[in-house]
Length: 273
Image 1: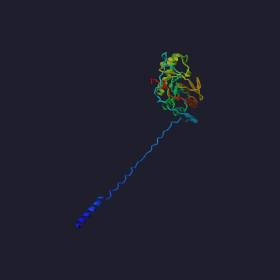
Image 2: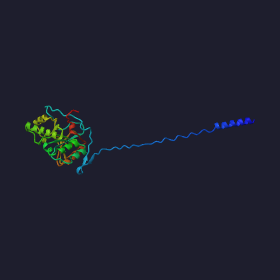
Image 3: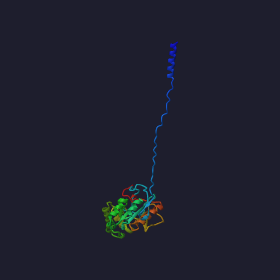
């Protein structure tokens, strides 16, 4: 009996060990998560900036990549270079041209760059020769394109072919030599020309004779017709003491009439779009 009792006690001991409590599984610790928040800041381009003398300069955004052809030079039925008074376009574009070069206004470069506008410059030899670096800076620093306006600014109408050709070709040769690029457009002084002018300008290699449909004088935009600027208008101003007033008046008028100034050369390119 003592053997049986000892055996039973051993068996109970085994059962007690085997039936002991299972270890309780502990929940896994949550993984550490790091959240990074990125803040994107967008900057709206200004619509106006402070300018020289305390004026406010309207700023324009380029509606396309400047320097890419947007149109083509029209063809004249007589085979000579065409006379362009305005640009045919269904876009709200307008064009600013600046003549002569008599006054090298120190604010010109700043105004062109700050407004984001690229004018076309029709220059005379007699004005450029007193200070080529000024016009070189407008060309290189503001993207302005230089074109021909004769050597001495005479009234060409009624003059002989050789005289007109010398004035026109000589001016183009000089501008190319001083500024590195040969002009492709021509504007006659005072807007006066005849058939001989067109023949001489054609022989000098120009692609178009450019006139205008509106002008800026003494800070006022003047219209040949109507009371506002319209899409395709070519506007005339000059290098004068009133350069700041005239240029800002043009910019403000563009804003008022819902137009954007773009380069004339993009619509009268030397190559087709």
